[in-house]
View 1 (cartoon, rainbow, N blue to C red):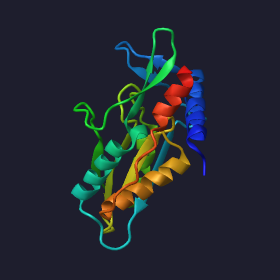
View 2 (tube, rainbow, N blue to C red):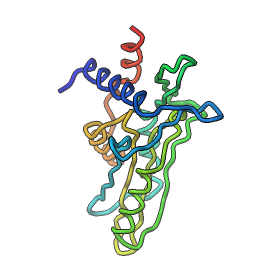
View 3 (cartoon, rainbow, N blue to C red):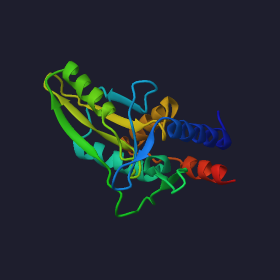
Length: 193
């Protein structure tokens, strides 16, 4: 298992590659990144539970609790006047923390797939965490909804996305999560050292 230092090094590398791939500011000073098909900047996934599915409000509550629990999901990027990209993490109880969660309807899995593809193509305002969005897709031909999420790759990779799924299922099942490692703060310290 990777130690904390390994996680912060990976995050620092991800931030460095963002700086090489078009991090810029718009006319309001927000940090933006130009999406390019290669390399991808977003990680998206969907999952379906078998059996009885929790109510949409339970999914929303679990997602909100997970974002508040996990510092990486509350972290954004900002650029200093000299162009240096820095991490900033909102406190879990920050009143300005808006946690997107969308309920949509789709005729079938093909339409759901197109929706998820669209979501992975939408840019994030990198200065405004969370760099994540999620929701449920209700399928006309199925009682079980698909839970979907999209994460900006600066804050998550495939391994951490798998952990996010596991943590979400733990919360949906009424379980407690172990304390989260504050990878963004570790990476920020390493960058400033």
